Image 1: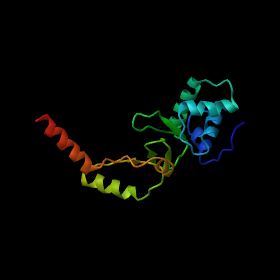
Image 2: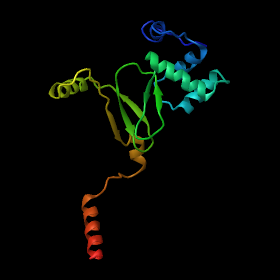
Image 3: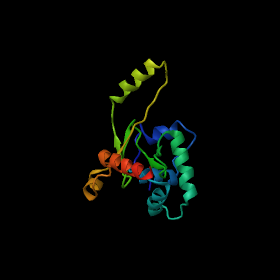
Image 4: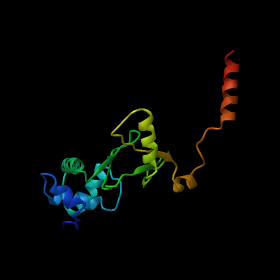
Length: 165
């Protein structure tokens, strides 16, 4: 089943390219339609609900084509598996350090900061992406903070140093 397409999004992207909307491409776009940030393996699970015979290789080839067209974005952070998303608008990410949940953050004011930096350092054709990390509300409720008590760390360092002397 092919998802409903609008002329400003998927149809326009495909029309400007040499690609047509195959059932595999439609299934991948449909799987990403809810705004999730999916690994290739998670994307494969969702696509197989529609097309049971699809392979992981097909998923990778399809998302590469959809990225080339500009219909899918890839997000990588801190050595974690790449995540794919179908969000076409410029946005940034909030990432939980514990459960690795990713939230899209729209921050139009970042553009003025980027422009100021570009002007100061004589850059043009600039772009920026911001990743904010921390613990999401769910993870913060489940575990105490992991920050280091600087006073305690300093005392431990002094005690360890004194023993070595």
